Length: 107
Image (cartoon, rainbow, N blue to C red):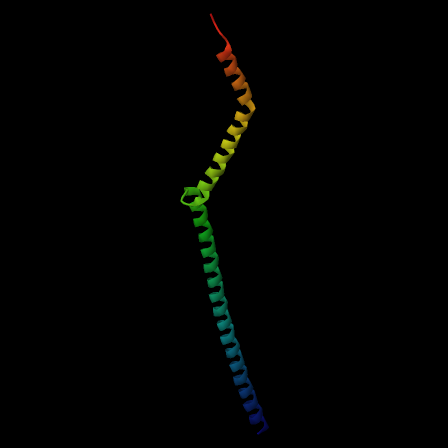
C-alpha cells in the first residue's frame, strides 16, 4: 500500500509540474507576443518619425516651403546693404567728379 501511495504522490506531483510548466510556457508566449507588439509599435513610430523628417527635408530642398524664400530674402538684404555701403563710400568722389566736369569750360 505504501508503494501505491508513493506512486500516486509521484503522479500527482508530475501532473502539478506539467501544469506549472504549461502555465510558464503560456506566460512566456504571452510575454513574447506582447514584446513583439511593443516592438512593432515602436518601429512604426520610428519609421513615421523618419518619414516626417525626410518629407521636411525634401520640401525644404524643392522650394515648396518658405525656407528658400526666407534664405533669398536674407541674401537680398545682404546685397542691398553692400550696395548702400559702396554708394556711401564713393558718393563724395562721384559728386566731386561731376562738379569738376560741369564747372570746367573747354574751348
